[in-house]
Image (cartoon, rainbow, N blue to C red):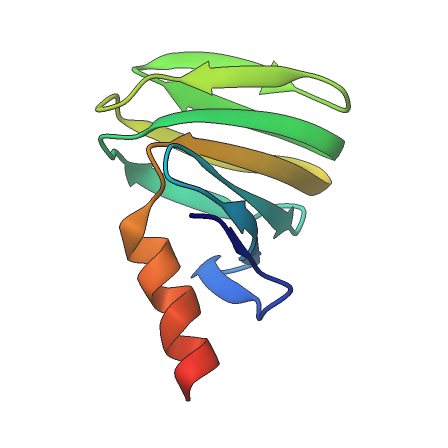
Length: 114
């Protein structure tokens, strides 16, 4: 079963918001807008994640290893590995998760029901 969402934007951290694009049984995608200077705190989840930069630049630290990515570049974040991000310049990213992030999809459903 797949879900499409043109729904709302949800805060992830100060200066960072996300919106689900599509979700299926095995993966989901969301777009993320990030203000220059914003910081996504260190966290981990069991899902594999691919971050693809549409514009702007991020410094992602994955498992203690820094990576700087810009437009057209992608980075795989393995499930369970702690990671964080600093926004070097205003950015737009496409994040893909496998399996889908049920916590985020529940947030989407809650907003549609209210």
